[in-house]
Image 1 (cartoon, rainbow, N blue to C red):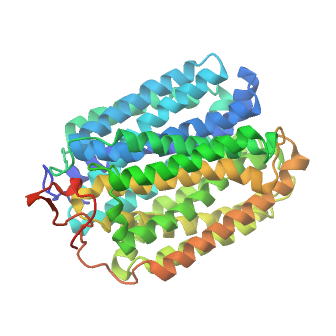
Image 2 (tube, rainbow, N blue to C red):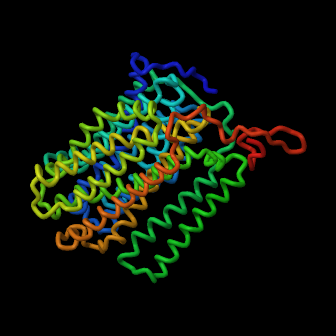
Image 3 (spheres, helix red, strand yellow):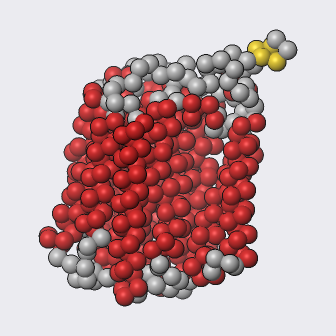
Length: 496
């Protein structure tokens, strides 16, 4: 199955070292995904950046991360999850250094794209390492701790970004990643066991990766340009057409490839498909929340960067305390209950956040909503992640992790591109309180609707009791002229 036995225990020192490396490694990517939002006004001022430049500072990172994360999972399965994880951490650190030294906005955007490549290498590896290394009885706890601590990194992003921007420079937002990455590399090389899938295809699906990247780039560019150029703009129509064609070509490539990075047979698992549909809805909503709430608190609410970033800290505390427990709850009762209730609680929080007024009181207007959001996320994230990873055979941990992460990042990417359009945020209005306030309220309600949709999907399709032993969707019998093929080379499952 792998090159290391799945025998690590959650409460033992060896297990804690592995958890530390994977949490800190993936945590720097979660941190970077949110920390930049708070620094955007200062980046724009220092680099004289346009609105489009600032948008692509966010989207450049998310685009390459979402487009290549499946390939990162395949590389880990083929060449070793620890090896690709360490490579991704080192790559991310070098790209972070380039971001911190960028002389202009488009150099920064290019470095952010490189950061996303590093994130795509390390993120699926972190989850796959946990799934393949921990004893089955402890996986849900380990993944719950990973989810909670990783969520803390994301929630700390706005606070840390605000503090660094106020007391020093936005460049430290990126440079701080370098020493953290060095620690991860040292710990991983010393303490993390190597695991891989010995049955992984020898060829890599570069065509599929290219088609996926083209599709996401076209869609994100088209939706981002729509408010400024209009729906009938040839540029917008061409970009959206390229995006749709790219996504269609990606699906066709994966269906026909002898070595797909995303074997479409994995979606024969009802639990896996449902978990990823819920992931898309939930993370699209969260993409809008982390993009707009901190910005709204500054522009409309008049909060300082540090105060706006600190507003989300209760989410951090609640996820730290409750996520591992939520993972264990999902393992005992089945994932349907927490995956249905959690998004509903989050939706209530977004309705409360939508009511934030100008110069809001933190104790009476902001804090209650943030606490409810923290409770909902604590209940949702760990069971959701554990269900997505646990629905497939251990040999396909990299595929499961890569697919789930790709869907989450794609949801966030499209949310940042589409929500301003849906909510009526036009070009140049992100820093205008009169224009941002009504659009922000609309965006929060749209995100609440997405969360309710995720809850309904979970209620209808996610298992309501602990799942039986997983069945590999690609463990099939197939042959050409009587010659057995490698499972990854089967175009279609002939027997299940």
